[in-house]
Image 1: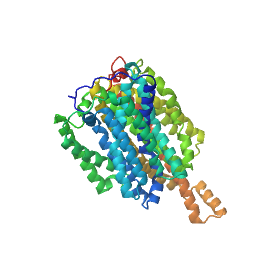
Image 2: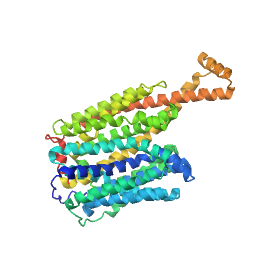
Image 3: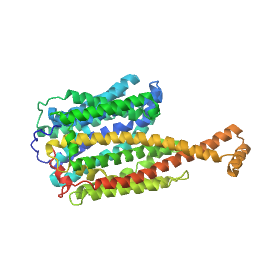
Length: 519
């Protein structure tokens, strides 16, 4: 959003039933949107099988949504000026419902990918605007509570997504992972429009920065496809990935130069000149990337190498929401009294402890061993989003809020995609290394190996079958060692990130209070 934007007159906070309904409607829309980015992950084999394509072609169902969403999120600031916050939000939700319905009806993979692109494009403004509309609904003193509601939906949805997606795919059929958005979205849009429509300053004529938009589509599209396809195509060994990296890099540099000199930029990059915005966005995004990468890694390891079913892995990881939901309101209430940097430090140290506990896992890990760090992770999550969001918004004028929310969410979502891709790739390459080291010890001079082979022979396994069994055991050890390496490295990264948090200087009155005048 251009910094020359005239501030919309701040609407009075909501009260009573309207406040409750407004909060529920905005949270539902956010939940539906975040859920949709993760719900399809577990359903890819079913979708690919049903539409007669390979699973690697099926992953375009995820990539297409991620690319389109990443492009439209940073446009929130400009679109808000052009159409008005409430109009844009309601239209975004209704179009999302329509795109979801069309995804469920898609007869082939090409049509499904096209509708997923459409769904990603219209989904962009929903998350940043739900944030700014929520902040505008609460009095300044309660801005922390508003952020708590928003943070809970954003953090719990990615955990619930795979659980719900797996259950729907197993018990009903995959199109229903899209159809469930229809009633939820209609209710959210209806309530939002009825409560907020009078609070909208309305549209304004704002020139469209066509060159900036074209460059944004080019570099973000190339970057997202590179991130999503990197692991599958063996990263920089592939000419396609190298080309995408060059396009993304050169496109980004041109975009940067253009946007900083354009009088009406499509993305307000000058926000990064503000120390709090820059440091808190980087800390939040890197942490979210590490967090999200580990959220993806845990169920993969449990299901592929620890013999967990999808439902059991879900049960081991779902309780992460328990403490997150219990503690978030407390954090929200106290954000104005306690330095948000201290609260964020608690989160990062908490994540480091959880990941250190996971780095001590082995193939004998019991269900309870997996469950305890999961519960503790929920407590760290409560302290994670709210303080950092408060620092990001600290000292910004209300008219720059939608642009700040759009830009910080864009960086966070992109970091999440990077984190997932880097961590899953590193997991495989570390496992290959551990497998080679372990396989070296399996030879005739190793008593344990010889004994195991002879026992398998006695049990009726042929030499080749026995070797396959031993290889599977080595695989299990190798992938477990690789996972624990990454947990340990992630723990160290969280400790390093604490220093970034302390480079910010949030407003003394409690940064959340600054956010309170949003809209």
